[in-house]
Amino acid sequence: NAGVTQTPKFQVLKTGQSMTLQCAQDMNHEYMSWYRQDPGMGLRLIHYSVGAGITDQGEVPNGYNVSRSTTEDFPLRLLSAAPSQTSVYFCASSLRGEQYFGPGTRLTVT
Amino acid sequence: EDQVTQSPEALRLQEGESSSLNCSYTVSGLRGLFWYRQDPGKGPEFLFTLYSAGEEKEKERLKATLTKKESFLHITAPKPEDSATYLCAVRTSGSRLTFGEGTQLTVNP
Image 1 (spheres, one colour):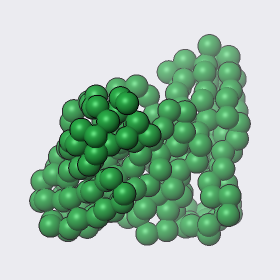
Image 2 (cartoon, helix red, strand yellow):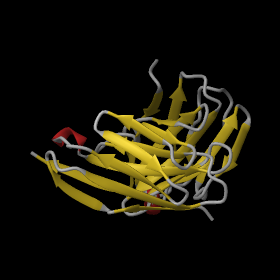
Image 3 (cartoon, chains in turn cyan, orange):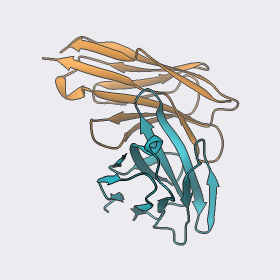
Image 4 (cartoon, chains in turn blue, green):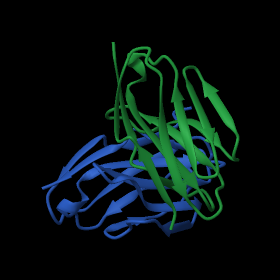
């Protein structure tokens, strides 16, 4: 199993640009989530999904959209990037509470 | 609102010098406390889940314990490869986790 995969590993955007961070898992987990990690702030939940077709907001959802059309994929969309969205983004999946994380995407918005 | 506080923020040990990391929590209905290890530039790696006060879990030089208000991660005779940031998280409903800010551990040879 590849576990949780994320692409790209690094990305630089200009303010106002849009992009999609990709996340996929091959463990057949129902629950998937997106976090951002910033120095001094810890991991903060952006959006999560409890199964295909079901998504909900986390702690810091503004500026981000998600969809879940399949069990395997959970992309995160930035509609109009802002410098405040410069961060490291982690995707995770879970079956019974223990979440397994991907390697992360380091995003810089200039 | 669920709160998780980890201390200390940073800890520097000599190889072989045992110590403990603390995770204190305020939640309404704990459904699991989780410990993760995170190496620089990588995603968090799952270590342990604890569900009830008095429970203990061990893995190599690490032992996690749980009380009604806090959890400890005991590190016995650490080695330099144990250097990492250790994260604590609590689950109160569904699968959502609330994370602490972590303890950055450095073990010097």
